[in-house]
Image (cartoon, rainbow, N blue to C red):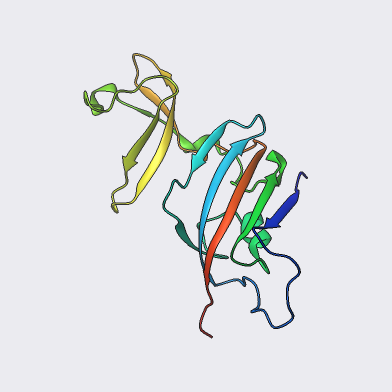
Length: 165
């Protein structure tokens, strides 16, 4: 299991005992994040706009949400996740499908290695990687692309909205 936490607080020294409690499960947190592979290749970035997540919800892997607990606004974290931690689930070969080539349009080209977005019958979107192209169709892998891979989450906590009990 590969887990490391490294955090710092921008411009802050020791914390006072009167300071509000840190993040708890259920709190809404505004943050910036980046996800990097072990070789520092960036695979996801929240961009300039902070994103809002509920700690303990489905927005973040559990290991990342757990690392946020007791942290404060202004803190920066670097959270390592090992591929064997199954933070993104386990690989399921049944999550691959062959889709007929005629189902694709000029705007959505099924190039090998491409990440494509599909709409489910309930309107929800799901992403899939093109893993093969043949006369039979286009093979799409709908497993999470980080399953089994070591990665790092870099997080900057912008603000915390404490849940109301």
